[in-house]
Image 1 (cartoon, rainbow, N blue to C red):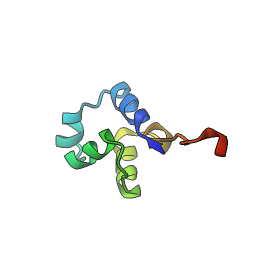
Image 2 (image 1 turned 45 degrees about the vertical axis):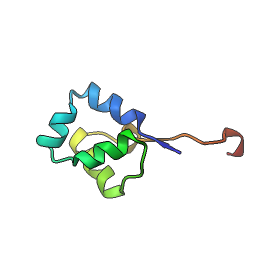
Image 3 (image 1 turned 180 degrees about the vertical axis):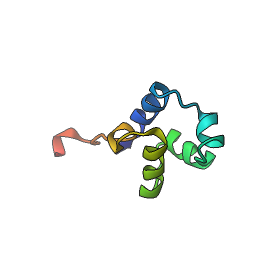
Image 4 (image 1 turned 90 degrees about the vertical axis):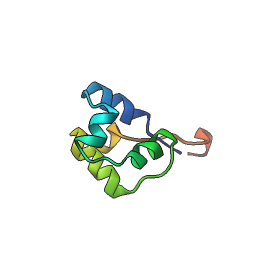
Amino acid sequence: MISYHPFFETAKAKGFSTYALIHKHGIANGTLYRIRKGKPITTETLNQLCTVLGCRVEDVLVFVPDDPEKL
């Protein structure tokens, strides 16, 4: 499964509030809702987040295997 835990750490470390992401950088409120709920986002959205935060993909999401023994 995909975890967005790194997104929250990156946003906090770089000083981005939810308000700033929505109102200053044009990130849709629905996008942040999807991230909070662990729902899928598009690669276009991922690109937008990385651009705004000035980070890499790994700073937004991480793959966490449902069953580590199957890897």
